[in-house]
Image (cartoon, rainbow, N blue to C red):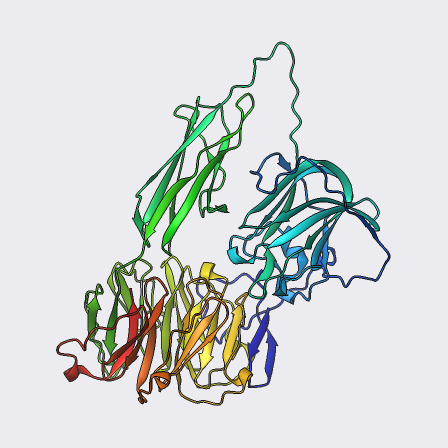
Length: 567
């Protein structure tokens, strides 16, 4: 993974996505390591050769197929591409069996970009599956599958228009040693990513006159709670009739596998497969259950049911340096914390995924919780003596959090994963002002007061202020988009800078002719349609659909405000 801090002339290699770290690692005391890619998974640069591609598409194809058959073994497969993949997004990632890694073009989709796979030997298959649940907007907008026996003469099997991940296409059985997925459409806003690519072969079955006829099955689906709130557990129950002698059920939401609901066993007595998941963003999802079939029981799928996940009502909390917390809108104050010369002032706060609680942190790394926020540890409990903690950021599920210091040192608690730190790279800075964690715990990024951005893990770098020629020294906070595909920086004057496709610009104070120099933080509205800026004097400014409330009563005696967190 590339470490970037644009504008400061640093370029380093951060920890590999496969590095193993203890449950708690203290930043600055263990430097990240790198691991070399195996020869069987190296990105290759295509050699100019003369090839022939037939233009006949095989009839009987289905670009919106459901998963079927048996996945081929990928042990001897080798992937290559003509796209400029970075070291963390090599083609081999699409074949490693891990949804936490991916192949990516690292550039916008364009006709002619391809991923090629040498199967190692002649194989027969009838289905191609490409999934990217961790990058759901990076599905191929248009593509064709080609096959070859000699890597010279190619036959086009099918041409499809992509609509969402997973992209599953079935066709009459093909026999080939090489396959190539070639993009046929372009988009100026998304890369092409594949977390996992598979080929499926039809499962061979044998019957004799002494065996009974295969039993037809039907699958139904129900959910509870529905509607659910963000951060609330949802239980899905698929029922297969008649109860089969075994088999599993896979659950999909908007054609993407539901987290924690893969290959759920079916009860042989009740015919039910039950799983639970928790959603951390709102909206409407089309949920469908697929029964795999088992022995004499045929596979079947449910209809598509709508799962509603409600967003929290709008609101925000303001926290002062002395530890008081004030709520506005739907954000009810749940208490603050006591600060002292030992703890230092309160420097940061963060809301839980359900927006029913929050964490607070002081300069020496003391953490306090309120509402449904869980305590997973802090620096005094570890015997660590620092006074430069600047921010706290929770993991996606709220089962852990990160603390970061002004020197870019990281401390991880709960299920937060360590991906490297600035001191661990031998760099010396003192102006880090904020950080955000990537969805799924794949990485995190930092921002300095000059708007320079540091990335660790598989977090994407979308730009920085020095990188676009902006010279400032008053950046106060960084805020991620809900999709993780971008971020917003805010300055002390209320200037907002958005980077990436997922971060939307809704306005700034200079743009509205408002002159201030005391902005301390930024918070998104629940539907990501706007954001709030908080001043040290307790004044909050709303942009987009974020409507600000008046200054909370009693706040004046407890200034200055140090942090804001939204529902």
